[in-house]
Length: 459
Image (cartoon, rainbow, N blue to C red):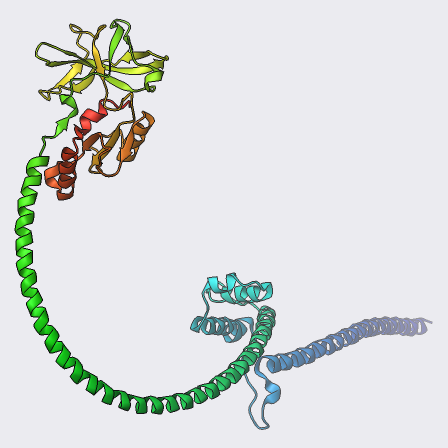
């Protein structure tokens, strides 16, 4: 029993050991099976990814081939010619295509381009837009970044150029019609000119024959006229001698008569300041209030703003100038005048400038008044010798207008109707003025200076 028990124990222990070993092998096999399953799954995933990548590579290869065809035209490569190996990258693409395209466009446009004003005034908007787009490419600021922009720009330019080409073609056809018409007209004119040339040649031959006949007749007439000319020259010589004798005699008689005329007509120049006769009188004066009344009014021809010089005749008919009055209010036979204060007047005898009125010798009742512009019978006529005034208040036209407004007349030339001659220049400085001054003196006109006349003209 003891031996049997020991063998059984060994048997059981070996069985347990074998069981444990089998269980461990089973567990290892199970684990190994799981790892193998995972490996198969990973291998399947790798195969799927490989197939996907392979498809992408094939698609990329096809796209790369198409890009090469698009960029380089690989489809036109001859058999046996090596394929292009240029890299397909944006930097290479920009350097190879985009920048050269923009540069080439600018170079083409830089060769010949119209001025901006030549297309800005076009009526056709499409043509104007096409030129505007072309103008942008003349600047370095326009740079392409992709083929789409180039294609769009080129398409727009082509559309604009085709639009322009259509107009040019229409103009060409119209011009061709004009050329044909001009050619026909030129042909007709040439034929007409040819006929005219033939007619002129015939006329030329006729005139040549006629000229020969006339030359013969002219030679006969020339000899006849030569004889008559010789006789006429002899007669002319005789008449010239008689004419010189008569001319010398007439010059002598004329000089004698001119001397007599000068002696008869020579007169001194009269001046307005030499006149002592008055046009009227002061009938009332108030130096304090600054006004006076004169015995001339509307019925005598007095006008508003007309000025009168006030003076007195002392013993010996010496003139004493007392001042100047200016008409302010008119009545029928009288006029109220303002006594002008601190006015500069020229003494008629001494020529000295006076500032009047004098407080110690005021204008008073009974003083005489006169004006070269005023005349009860008819308007006074003035003629100016010269055309430039020294005063800054008026020019000649304005002064003449003032005289007319005051009732006077202005003449252009010295005549019998001339009353006053106003000297604006020294007669001796101008021959024409000197002759007019002599004529005025002979016609008994009265001479005045510019300053003397301006004393009677209101500002």
